[in-house]
Amino acid sequence: MDTSQKLCSSISIATEERRRRKKVKMRGKDKHESETPHVLIFPLPAQGHVNSMLLLAELLAISDVHVTFLNTHHIHHRLLQFAGNIEARHPTLGFKTFADGVAQDHPRFGGDMNEFFNHVKFQGSLKLRELCSDHSGKPRITCIIADGMFGDISSDIGDELGIPIIHFRTASACSFWSFFSVPVLLQSNELPIRGEEDMDRVITKIPGMENLIRCRDLPSLCRGTHDGKFSLDTVVFQTHQSLRAQALISNTFEDLEGSVLSQIRNRFPKLYALGPLHAHLSYRKASKTPSEEEPPPSFTNSLYDVDRTCIRWLDAQPPKSVIYVSFGSVAIITRDQLMEIWYGLVNSKKRFLWVFRPNLVAEQEAKDLPLELVEGTKQRGCTVGWAPQQEVLGHAAVGGFMTHSGWNSTLEGVVAGVPMLCWPNFGDQQINSRYVSEVWKMGLDMKDLCDRKVVEKMVNDLMEERREEFEKSTQAMATLAKKSVREGGSSCSDLDSLIEYLRSIC
Ligand code: UDP
Image (cartoon, rainbow, N blue to C red):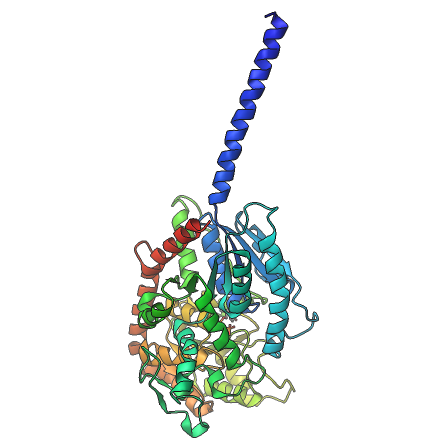
């Protein structure tokens, strides 16, 4: 062989070797990619749902699971506007969006919920099917985690395309179980509720909740009035659709809702209780950061413009002197209710920080406010359009939380160890507030009452008369909540099992 032949031969050997190595590498890559779970997460487009499902998305992404988060354009735009650049939070967390099919200025869930829900279901199912059938991008979707409110469409698409489905019900386990039990209540004549005089009748047929719940504590949809909210049939139907899912996720923890979780497991054996998700994410992020580095940034998942001026106001108040008042992102109150609560707060003589969302009150006509309210608020109050809620609840000046008992707010109150004065508005809030007051003994339930004298008395009971009693149980539960998300805690091991399951099915 002459030199040039030798050279050609060694080049071709080298090329061959490179090809072989590349092939091995590609095989390795394919193998790796085919073993990487890719989860598509599809939330109901409302603040509470998006918040908890985005927390889950981040928890999975930091555990090396590929996540695609499916948002409506509207929600995505608001997140980009108010929660910062969510697209840069983690390299394995991506976003896809679709048009929800209503006009830009439509009130969405602030209007007729059923009508909007049907629009989102239709448009969302088209996008979901498109993304799940698209095999061009790698890695392909190996599992759908859908909001349990999309139980039917997500299960249909999963069945059709052979993709495993997990349902995530973002509300409390006690509300999920009460919705699931509605058919039993109808068969045993415990439902329907027969008017106002029937409201204190005790419900006996929900397994695990015997004699704890009165008619008034059932999810508000059981009252038969839905004022543009979801119908009971819709929610019960979607709840039962979860029997078609391979697994169920709940944002709760064993020490909080263990007795209900064990009932649910009788029907849903693969149940992952991962909550409180906000505490879980903070803990996992911090534990992944080497101690010499800066702690990871804590993000908000806010769809509204956060007004941080209230933190400066709180800094100037004595410890545990302020009651924080917030009714979440959807609840709407009447002008009469507003005045009763406002008078109650001012007359209690306690300091208060009140989230006064622009669309909080149904009737917006501006009447002159009584001078005593204006003066009382100037002296002891602060109002904002939207607060950094978790930071507020963790502030040393906050000693109580007047809440509508939305599930995210309840969990945030639990983790912060702040006693609650509950004034539930709709949906799961009626049963959550019953558990806060009667099971967990973490506060008072003002359900179905709205009178300035009652508000004044309950604020004083919470902040003064019965403060020690409530603080004791709330702080004990806060400790258990934090324990549940640490190494060896129930939510921590459920998350590990979920990730293992996600790997096993791809
Ligand atoms: N929230 C907030 N600032 C506010 C009021 C609420 O950040 O001024 C957040 C709160 O921390 C919670 C969510 O909005 O995470 C409300 O969810 P929740 O389930 O309590 O009630 P919903 O809005 O769904 O009725």
